Length: 597
Image (cartoon, rainbow, N blue to C red; front, side, top):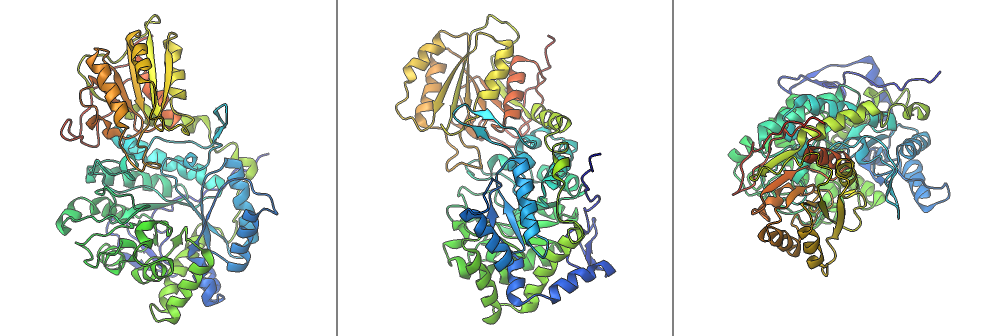
């Protein structure tokens, strides 16, 4: 008989508070309690040297791929655990079974249980999928992938946000992951933002608060810690903090009414962790340092004014937004001084641990200050039950991860999110005329293997005369005249753009040659239907198109939903959680009923 995986319920409020602290849901204020079980935390902390304490708050990154026992990668991981004695890791991409097996192996090497965090903004499948086998682009499957947060915002449905959190927790914990670096609570009110974009619920702070808190409760009610990010707000930036330091030059009153609204709601709702922003906000700290390094932001505002008692996690410490001013070691010391509890993705693990220790010996902060962070980490491990059982059941994983009922919920989110921004000629839906000649043109990076695959496959089920073309964004010499000729011979031309997907975008803009091509189609009377699978603000580059549909993301689940919406198999009900100035305002969305087949 298969043993079911154990998941800890009802962790929402007290899950990751410092030992002897819980958080009340209405005020976010702490009350002091001492339990007998917290003696494990006290005992482990008391047994540690200063350097071992420092290592508990340094979490390197690890791929979820296969690594042989004598490979350089595995030897390095063994050193991190057995010699450096790190307290946890940030997990990156891999197949579900390999991720779970690898995390079990890492746990088995560590005397003190490890905490594993991962960027699960779009579900457990955002990190734990099998990828694509080349050159055939075979989808190897994996955990469930949801559309991006902005798609959930387009549904306005907090029940779906909760369900996404619930399934992310159930699948993530089955893999051995304990902390989701999600939800993104940034209010994306800057259309030029290249790094947040669809990762946000939208530009309405109240909507972001409602959806974010629903996701947090779904996640933490089912055994995983949520991380609201990027405090105090990364939405109003046009700079990617991976590459440079963003500066948000708005007033404190604007921050209080926009950027801080979702974070206050999350703190009051019991969020277990908060991730810092590698950007400056002069209204909060005139020294122009990023929030990650600012005591005024983390200790004064987040801990003091807002009463947060959970774990403060840095954004990746190898990003230029935090490195350029001070360098790696000085940035580490300033981060601890500011109030950071956990440093993720450091440039160099040994040097980072050494820098934490040096901060104590130099008098930058006390050992007691370091102890407070270590206690939060250890108490989290205790509350998650890792002191008793730190391994996951590999046999049970197959019956928990990627389940068809989980996939159905992701499909529901995707279908309800599809937003018909404009359709002035009433071209949508296309209907079920099997004689219709449809040309589907896909614009994407050449390395984006899934781009267009699920979309075109779904279209072809009802439109057998479908013709497809792929346009690589890197190909400056593309033969656009050939595509124009193909469009002239089609009854309908659909142009799908995967440009500007926020997790890999340096720029959110489509190539000028491509927008010129779309304009030529319009001028020739081809009436193209443009579908945005990448940057939803693409309409600002092609305002003259008569039909514009937003699918919010290029994952297969969103591709299928967009195709079903276009042919009328499913209804269209999404409404914009953003505006696209000066063309459309927030809330826009034309609804269409599903057509009988």
